[in-house]
Length: 160
Image 1 (tube, rainbow, N blue to C red):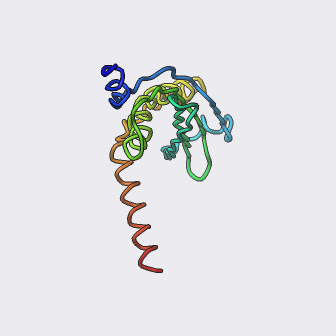
Image 2: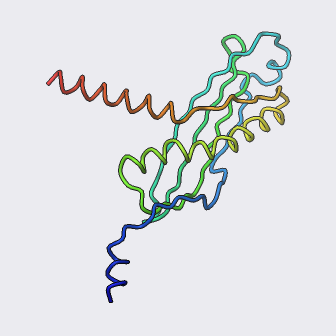
């Protein structure tokens, strides 16, 4: 009887595992058409990154890493790629700030190489040079976002 009571009182050991990685959405556009291949201008690459996490049930989260890459030649967009790389993660025993950090750092770090490969593959299939995106430090991005949110909160409190 005592063993059952102790088991019920013992907090669950935190668990985190990847269940599935999948491509949720993808788009490739070449607005310049054939003109993009006749232009000798050095391209300018712009990258936009966003993550979202949705609780599926008590133990599962869907995390989506959205990357938008636009490559401009002069004032015109040569090609645009949007990828939503998603993963289903099993999480037990993590709550609050610890869960938020995992969803915004560890999960996107797992998903990024898959999104990067899709973007590179689409660029090559679109007859453009390979586009190898550099690694992203999601821990640093998260720390920066937290610091920015704290600064905005402090400024908001000071204005009141």
